Amino acid sequence: MQSNKTFNLEKQNHTPRKHHQHHHQQQHHQQQQQQPPPPPIPANGQQASSQNEGLTIDLKNFRKPGEKTFTQRSRLFVGNLPPDITEEEMRKLFEKYGKAGEVFIHKDKGFGFIRLETRTLAEIAKVELDNMPLRGKQLRVRFACHSASLTVRNLPQEREQPPRFAQPGSFEYEYAMRWKALIEMEKQQQDQVDRNIKEAREKLEMEMEAARHEHQVMLMRQDLMRRQEELRRMEELHNQEVQKRKQ
Image (cartoon, rainbow, N blue to C red; front, side):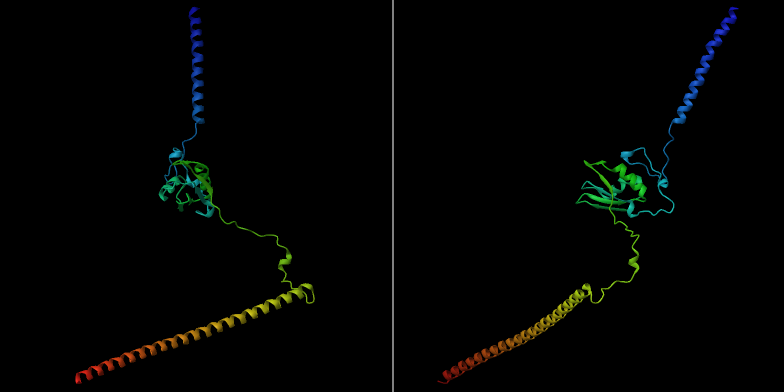
C-alpha cells in the first residue's frame, strides 16, 4: 500500500515537469516566429552609409515597370553644404539610394543638386538625409523646383469662332481708325526723319573727306615752298663763296 502511494507521488511530480517543458518549447517557438526576418540583400550590392549602418535598400522594389528614370521629379536640392565638399563625396553621401545621374555643386554659395534614378528613391533620401549633420552643418534636402505643366480646359465655345471686328460707324470703329491714322502718320514721319538724318550724315562725311584732302594738299604746298626757300638760300651762299674766291 505504501509503494502505491509512493508511485502516485512520483507520477504527480513528473507530470507537471513534462507539462512545463512542453509549455517552454511552445514559447520559444512563438518567439522565433515573432522575430523579424533578416534584411534583404540589395540587388547591386550597395549597403547603407555610416549614418544608417545596417540598413540596406533593394533598388528593384522602388522601380515601377516602364517608369522613366533620372527625370526632373527625382532631382534634389541639397543646401548648407560644407565649402570643401567634393563631387565624389556628394555621390558617396547618396550611394545608398542608387547611382546618381547628375551632380552639381556651387561651392561659393554652399548648395548643390543631385538627380537620382526614381522619385521614390529621392523621397527616401530626402527624409533620411534632411537635417543630417555634416562637418558642423545640418544639410537641407528639398526637391528641386521645376516648371509646372499647365493644362487649360473647358474653354468657352466662342473661342472657336473667327475673330471679331468692330462694325463700321460704331464708337470702337471710329476711334480705332483714328488711332490707326495717327500710328501711320507717326511711322511716315519717323521714316522721313531717318532719311533726313542719313542724308545729313552722308553729306557731312563727304565734306569732311574733302576738307581732309584739301588740308593735306595745303600741307604739301607749304612743305614745297619751304624746300624751295632753302634751296634759294643755299644757291646764294654758294654764289657768295665763289665771288670771295675770285677776289
